[in-house]
Amino acid sequence: MNPTTATRLAALAGFLAVALGAFGAHGLKAVLEKNGTLAVWQTAALYHLVHAVVLLVLAQRTSVARVPFALFGSGIAIFSGSLYLLAVTNLKWLGAITPLGGVCLLAGWLALILKPRA
View 1 (cartoon, rainbow, N blue to C red):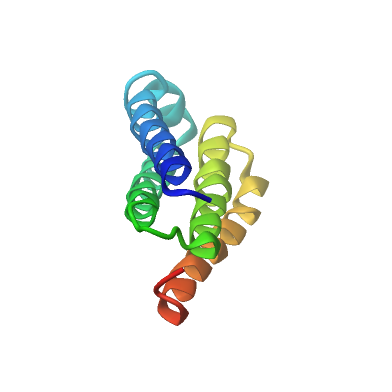
View 2: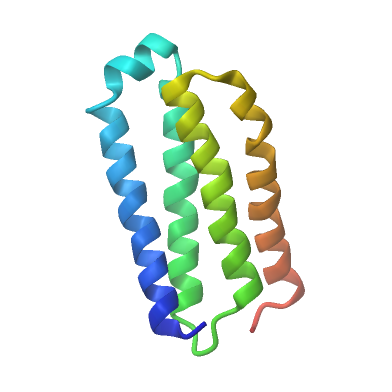
């Protein structure tokens, strides 16, 4: 993946993190409070935004580290995505999916420890 594409994907992840965070705080606040899942949404948005920044840092390198980039992207989608869905639907079984996203995020960090450069 070239740095331009990686930057665009990172920017999209960041945009969605801010948009979803704001939507949860304003547009969905009543639903999330009714479900008792406002903190779940906030956790999803926090991890989403933090890892979007990580994607942006990786994208700024001359050679994008594909494995960590893919792991962080997958982690955002699975970890934060399952929490967003759980918060809105209150379907508790979605919580069983969340750890898979967490493993992707951890694996992304581990990949950077083992091979910091692409």
